[in-house]
Length: 235
Image 1 (cartoon, rainbow, N blue to C red):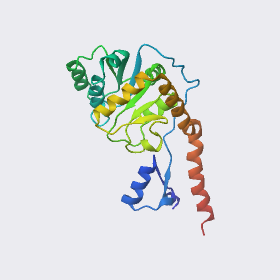
Image 2: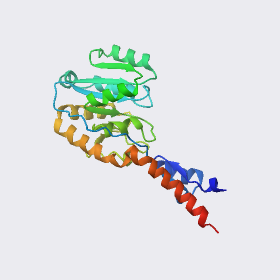
Image 3: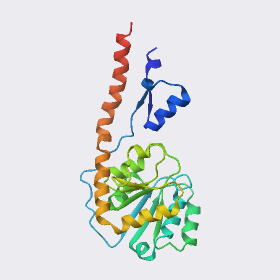
Image 4: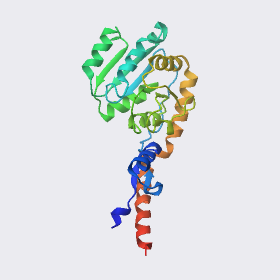
């Protein structure tokens, strides 16, 4: 049957390796198709400002490193803390996050709006200066790809398919999961360096240009066309 010849489509090289090693598939049976990204045009102009906005988008909880992020923000020196604001948007363990922010006396610095619509998300991405996602486990997070498409420098972790797109010092900063001092230092670095924020953001945008959603359907169609072609030529 033709469906037996349809390859397994995965999100990243790491998932391809998993499929080969754990599922016993051959390399040619697994095709990588990264998540698509809608690229805004033009990219917002982000000059230097007195307040640097750091944005987290995703499920608020331990797996995404949300609580580590709040603690890392609390560990910033007073000067950098006063220069920055942190927004954690998403659903999840909101009450625990609120309680942690309050206990660390950060209610003036950290906002947790909860779940946001796509329009609100785009507004946050347009106004942000830095995107941050200190996850412990990921596939290839859409929120990160969207932020890169908006020209934002990213601070994230080398888990799942992330290091296939994010190169430390080139289009973002990579920190080890759970390393709160390292996470705090990465934030401090970008808060203080406008030039680095802009250069990393520019590179981030270029890194995901090939994932433009307008090309995604063509890529998916090509996969199925190749299957149909091989079926017709099969003896």
